[in-house]
Image 1 (spheres, rainbow, N blue to C red):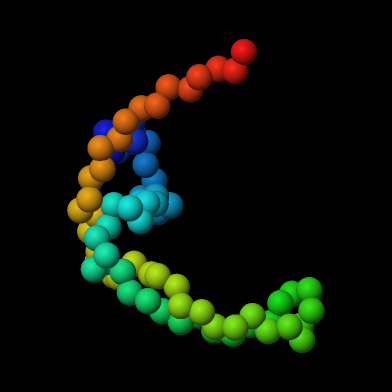
Image 2: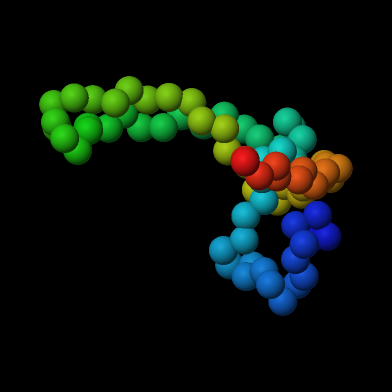
Length: 75
């Protein structure tokens, strides 16, 4: 939370998110989506594909060094 400049009062645990960079590869599993029709043209089918999903009860364990980068104003 220090890296995000936040404290416990600033975070709603019902809607909070953590970037996937904070989890090890073993915390993810591949899942297949279902084929579906596009909204524009119901005859066009979007094929199934594999997506990476976080496993239940995964704990973030990679705490990255966050450097502040100063913005350079354009003249």
